[in-house]
Length: 243
Image (tube, rainbow, N blue to C red; front, side, top):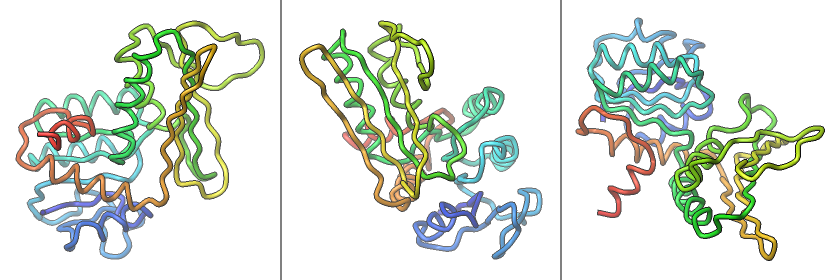
């Protein structure tokens, strides 16, 4: 696989380079160290098949511009994108294959399915999402928490996100609460609490280490090769795996 890794010198970038199983044809990193270029414009003509981006959401315009220039697929594993950045990604998917997910874990993809099933099974239940991450994480709530909310909204179209609680904020019928904790070196914990007056169902996923995200990104990259232009995610990957 002829891959360019963006964010190659970060914690995830290093794991991606290892998971690739062969040297990437190009590396981009803001520090410009370990053989990486600072910008895509500095890369030689490496003819990539795919770009895997685990840098920062602000790099999206440069990542997308290079992918379109090279007419290659792109896997975007960063989170916290602005609406303008998301629109760039969506527009690019009309011309090239784009894999865009708030979490690259197959376990989280399964959790999204279970969350939707639970919400459908208990249509009157209160649902709360709790996400816990290390004290260095920048965005809150996590991209994964938003993914879980969107999965629930598929079966509860009137659902509304309610992020955090403070002061007088009595719960409304349609809200899905999302709470965020930042502490220590927690890789990632996501819980969904589905509560009726008589019982509570709790769904939980815990990441033991960041290598699972690299493994998921590699699965996404292999899935994307040869695909037509379009926007793909972990649900699409799971669906194909069942065939």
